[in-house]
Image 1 (cartoon, rainbow, N blue to C red):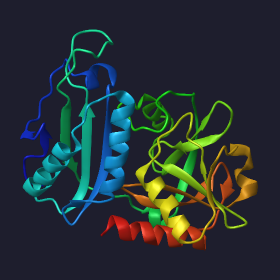
Image 2: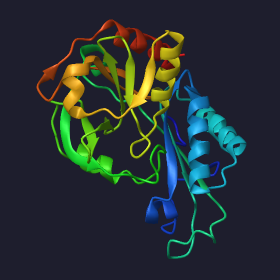
Image 3: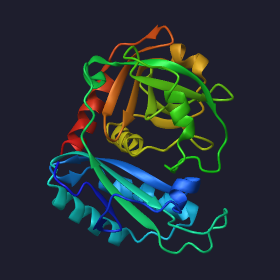
Image 4: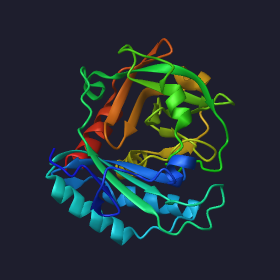
Length: 277
């Protein structure tokens, strides 16, 4: 990949002030976007979520300015396929939590290679680790804010290649998400269920895409509190998703095995078409 690989507020730059509130407090948001043919995929859904998150955090983002910078950045990088990370912080301010003196937000763009996994879980199926970490109720549920310490702690629970992803529950024993992905269950009746993320977790862009696809397919899709103890009984198929990797059929979790079923495979095909468009 040619330089520049990092821009800050529309300019090539690889340094950031130590007073930035994203560093000090995790005061900001980010989007991780697959690039195909030199263009950001699922861009509308990513920008919609970023804008909603900025409203929640009262960060005054100029979306038109950001998207112009993204277009120029990708054109400058000459990258055809990769991962674009877009980070928005509240900018720099004085010591303390009060953000009232912060007026100049920072828009940070970076480009990275697509992750390569061998064997590929999207083809061979994913094996999931049962994480011990539990997610509590959060006022920031749904948005992709910069404080991802819970995900870091959950991901540190296993190493090696025996597992492809970890599944995280809340303190009530409800399944919430993977460390970097959202979860869907296909029931024996053909219904599609994804965990209710009203109190914790991240509402992923690929999750929203799949809910849209499910409606197009005529599937009944719902968000529900889903007890981990019920997975073996209600799930005919299980799969994970995110906007970089697409769909990973789940073949093993907590000594339970699943086949890669027809609903999962059709959704995987449709998502991959969107990500390779």
